[in-house]
Image 1 (cartoon, rainbow, N blue to C red):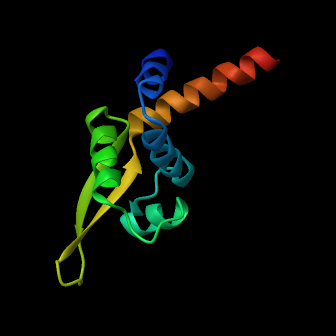
Image 2: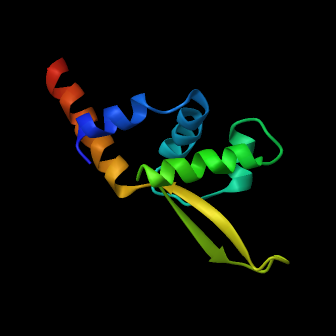
Length: 102
């Protein structure tokens, strides 16, 4: 994803979608659980609206969503991380910022 395409995607996000994306950007390439996301945004747990927002971020290819097997009664948990395309776009944007400062 090119920086301008990333900027366009981000400009179309709601404030809540941006807040969720920021949490995952700060986590970097680390997979983050729903519980961790909820705690970071000051909630006890994610509600269906939060999960819908995360699904929309995945549809825009800004994040990745995976189900991983675990020993909970459901047998899996859903984890999230920023996509490689988003990481690459952010790195390009940061490089452009550094070039313009020098």
